[in-house]
Every structure is written in C-alpha cells, then in structure tokens.
Image (cartoon, rainbow, N blue to C red):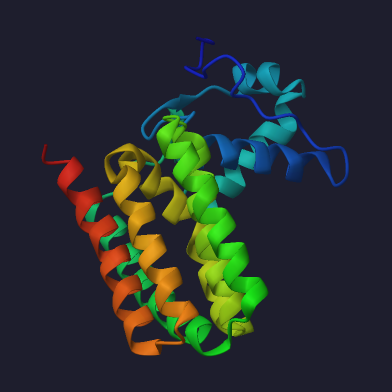
Length: 225
C-alpha cells in the first residue's frame, strides 16, 4: 500500500497531450471512480503529487475542480477528502439513469442493425469472461462499455449527452456492488440483446428498466448488510 492508501499499480499514467492540470484531474477522477481512492479518504497534495510525478500546483487545481463537481470535499483546516455520497444522492442519480437507459433501450430496439447487435454480443461475452475470472475492475469497465454501446445504438445525441453526464457516477456507485451483481447482470444483458435483436421496443424497455432498478436496489441494500 502507498501512504495514501493507493494499491500498488493503481496510479494511472498521465497521458502526454493536453494541459497538465487536466491530465492530473483525469487521473484523480479515474482513481476516485474506480474506488482506488475510497469515499472519505484524505487526499494529501504532496503525496498525490509524488505518486503522479508532478508538482503540487496541478494537484491543487485538480482538487479544486473536483470539489466544484462534487467528487471531493475541501474542509477548512483539514484538507481534501473524497466525497462520501449519501443514499439520497445515489438514489436520485440511479433513478435518472433508469429513465435514460430505458429510453435508450427502446430506441436501440427500433434502430440497431446487425453490426450493432454483434458488438453488444461481443461485449457481453467479454463481460461474462471477466465475471468468471473474478475481474471486478474489468467487469465494471465492460458494463460501462455495454451500456454506452446501447446508448450509441439508440441514435439520439441529446440522450447520449445526458447519459454521459452521469456515466462516471454510475461507475462509482456500481463498483462496490459489481461482484454481488456478478453473473446475473450479464444474464440480464443477454435478455436485453434478445429484445433489441427482435426489435421488441416494449420488451427492451422493460428489461432495461428492471436491470437498472435491480442495480439501484442492490446498491442501497449493500449499506444495510
């Protein structure tokens, strides 16, 4: 373990293009959404700078931006801490996600072609392999890619933009329940593919709504277990 609680190998490499402050921001946001940096964890500028191989200034700027966006809490005389989402925050976001994803599934059933359905099947197979190998991080990433593909097949740019605004927080909330959802989540994905392939808009809507609602209930149940 590193002194900030980061697992060895968890620190992402900073991509070269773009301003340094933006690259540091993206690196820290990825560490937060994957929960390499846990909710409530103290974020020490000097330690983060050392892990990322940068000075403290871009780290400070990134933490201020993350605070503005609700990922980090800046506490007077205490410093920066990863935000701890309340149950109400999670519920509101996951409810909105259900609305967006259900409509995306309906539109995908209306619009998806053979190539799009094949892409969903390939992503589903990869996700099933990740679950079988107990690769939680891989399963979370593939779950996000699967849902993003459904959104792409929906063919509605405004819907996709709205979904993009909540995507990272969905990943943040999904990560702690990914192992529990496990294989069942990908069985539900298979059911969704079948509905989209059959161009059954009503069935696709129902499957996606049930799928996302189950994830929402699982997230809340985990805090009571």
